[in-house]
Length: 362
Image (tube, rainbow, N blue to C red; front, side, top):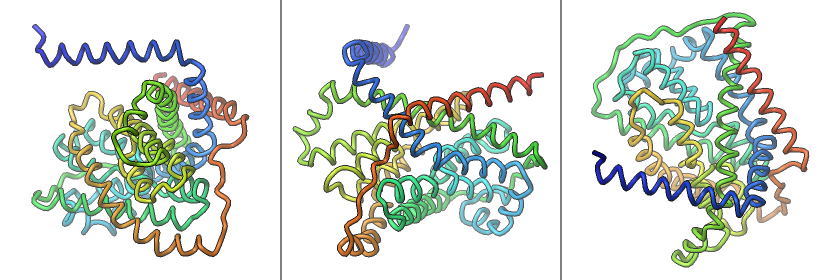
């Protein structure tokens, strides 16, 4: 027999599916525009900012560079984070590679039996961080037209992540498990790095697109109107917060294009990452039994911690500069051709991923 909790969750899921079906039938135009907007975000922001860095991260993890990077980090890795010495490269790549890089690395260690589920859950509290390519290039340069603001976001996000990592590791005993990092040389490493980056990029864009399509359904369902009637915030702030709850890039676009949206909200949006990023992480840990509850708790704590550091720095280095200049805030999207460009790029990523997997099977 099913428990009452299971039955209730089944009814809730059925209601959500019914609402989605009705929404797709009655709001097909709005959903289509949301999908197009998501594809434009992929072509104009996500792919240019993340894909080259994902390839670089793949090369670092596949070559002997990982050993070189781990060496100077041994003290921090072993004494502060209470992890094996060789995990330094994993932590470093997690901090600078962007949201999915840490999840992919940690989940692979779990699947290979190199770490326990408990250690993986603790590592995910500090191995998930928005990378510099997204924060500095996409948010800072393309959305805010201010590289300094992007640098402030990256530094404060990383500092908050490290502080949380130190906190969750305080009473842990040092681990000395050794891991063997697979090394590939020459063109083979580059081919595998591009293939892995294509697969990861396809997953990132897929979640970004689907949540961009979900947002119009949420808006048409009256959720945003209900929030506006309850909370005493401006419409632009609520729109950015709701968008960021579902998808981080859409939230950043809303926060940077809306009027009088506080910088602290933008910091909180990139701290949480949105449901889109959480589902990306969940996809990495499928079948491992690793709980994501510590990760979610750490992201909730990460938001005020990072914002408390980011807001004063922004006021000192960016707001004073804006007084003497009149920058024109760029539109985050490209022209209408972005839809077809993004679709073509995603198809190329899918073809490359499938062809590489078929080659491995043979």
